[in-house]
Structure formats: structure tokens, C-alpha cells
Length: 399
Image (cartoon, rainbow, N blue to C red):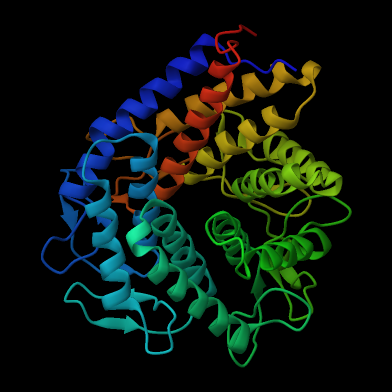
């Protein structure tokens, strides 16, 4: 079944890869890394300098992933040193006596929030999986630390049905988003530690998503739930994020395609349709932040990360679509690439804008380090898919 890309798509991919290798990775290692205190700054300002201020625990593991993935894609720069710089900071400055990764450090190196956050553990696990996959020397250590995080979560935060609580003792709301990133991490660990607990946890998390996160009537992923995994009352329980519809669609395909799980693949298609049909600003053709459960817009701001998830989901759809659907998804992929590139305009090469307002102007603010993971993941998906098309000699098939 032929699923080739257009010449324009191929050109976009080459341009993004060049931007990553020649601009972004070198800049974030040179200026985004704190070469005194260790770790990475939360942001780089629009002069290209790392900005002082508090640093969240999720930033270092995201940078581990970004540099390891850059190395895997072929960047010849010091990706391993950059990744280890982030790993050492995560372990030395953020890891608690209990073994989990804390939430926030100030710019003197002092922890200001040592509480457990499921979201932070998800990214710690993803960063550790990236190190384990990339570096045999550190494989055993990464596997051991990941196992400790897993065991701590199970012992202190496991939900009686599936997934995890956010607090101990349990309190509302429960959230789908950290479970989404946890699933991404467990799927990464399945590949590098097939004898570990990761496949079982992936199955558990996907079951939770199919039973509770995805609304049976609309097919949309909700954000917030009560302690029984029912939607929270009020506006909180009605919140839908278009970027997460796309991100879940991508994960459902990544999990469901190898397993030939038709329910997961059908759910992915429905989520994609929701994201594309209701989650785009019609004036600027970008993914916006939030809807309610009637698909009415509640937050029209477009953030960069949502565009990267549109890209990943479009690729996932191209991988499972029928021949007569290919043209639709190639066009959608091209639109998502154009949307992403809007966020590179007007800033130093290697940086990005974060928030596009409904009037078409960007908020003037620093480039957040946490977004780099989203960009790198999208480029990685593009490069991998591009290579598959090239190997079939259908790369430049026109639509």
C-alpha cells in the first residue's frame, strides 16, 4: 500500500532536521545548559542566553531525551555529554531519598518543592529509558533507578482499579495527562528492558484510557477525573485539549498497531478527527489549547507543543490509513508542518515562540526548554517516516 509523501513534505523534513542539527542542539548545549550549577535553564531569552529563575524537575529528563534522540538521528555534536549533564543534575539535585524526582529547584541549586508529582516521574522514566537505549555503560544504573521509581509509585500511589493517584492520601482531581506521558515512558522501557514490569504497566494504562479517559459518547479524551475515574463535575471535567487528542491518537497507534488492537486504532482515528475538526483556529490553521465537551472553544491561544502533536498524529494516521485516505493525511501533515514553522519566526535560530494569540501575534517571552522535547520527538517521527518512504522508493510521490 503506497503512502508516499509530497516533495514539499520532504523539503520541510530536511529543513527541520538541518535546523535541529545546526542551530537548536548546539544552542541549547552552549547556552541552555548551566555549566556552573549543572542541569538546564528553564528558558533561553530572546537574546540567546539562558535565563535565571526556578527550574522544574521535568526539564532535565526532557533534555536527556532530546539530546539522546539527536544523537540517534545522527547529530555529530556532543550529544552524550549534553545528555549526561542533564542526567547528573536530575540525580544529584532532584532525586529524593525515597527515589523519586522532585518538582522544583531555585537558581541557587536549592530544592523548593520536593513533593511527588506523577508527571515528573513520567519524564524521569522517559529520560532514563533514553539513556538506557543510548549508552550501554549506564544501562544497568538507569534500569535500577527506573525500577525504584516504578516500585515507589506502585507502593504509595497506585489506584485500586488502574493507574495512579496524584497525592497520598488520595485527593481529586485525577488526571489523564501524566498517565499519557507515563505510557510514553513505559513503551520506551518495553524496548530496552523487555523482562521488566513495563509491558504490563503499558497494558494497564492503555486499558484505563480506553475505559475512562476516552468519552464513550464523543470519543474525546477528557483531562480531569474524580477518585473513581469519572469526569470531574463542572468545567474542570468538561475540559478537552486538542493537542492531547492528537497526542493520544499517536500513542494509540504506537501501542495498538503492533498488537493489531482494533479498538485502540479506531479510537485513534476518532481522536484525530476531533483534533482536526474542532481543535484548529480557522484563521491561522494552528492547534488551539482547549475546548469543552461540546467542542466549543474555551481557550483560543495556540501553543507550539500542540503543533508538534498534530505532526506526530498525522504520521500515525498515514501509517494505518487505507490508500484512498492517504491524500487527506498527507495534506494534513503539510498543514501541521506549516503551523509548526510559524513558531520559529522572529526569534534567533534554534529558539521558538510558545504562544500565538487569536489576533495572530505572539506573546513576547523566553523560549521554554520543556518544549524542545516536543519538537525533537516530532522531528524524530518525521525522519523515521521519511526513511521508510525512501526505502520504498515512493518518497516523492505527489498528492
